[in-house]
Image 1: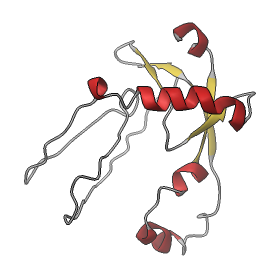
Image 2 (image 1 turned 90 degrees about the vertical axis):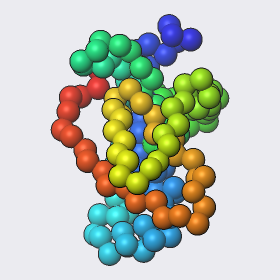
Image 3 (image 1 turned 30 degrees about the vertical axis):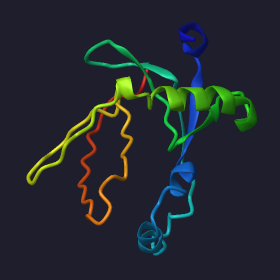
Image 4 (image 1 turned 180 degrees about the vertical axis):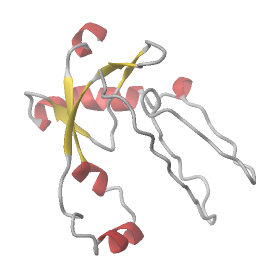
Length: 136
């Protein structure tokens, strides 16, 4: 599998992420002039972390739509395998929230996969995005 993935490039689309938006997000964003614009980026499927040198999968179910030079239909079986692979329990870290908790993760080597286990509670997040390197 590593030999197959090494060298592949994935196409990521903002349109895929849009289907995950809440009703509130859609209403808020409707006023923005660039809301309907689709942003597409290509990144290596396996990237090397610039600080640790470790290799990691760089695809996710919220954005990755296909592999470069393949259709979505051709890409689907392998992408589904990769999406389910990174959700395996042995790769998960569950964060136990307490008042005043703060969590950080590095999107270059971590998948954020929230689980809706807080019914009846409000989830408030503040996101900080740091400028960084281009995936290699």
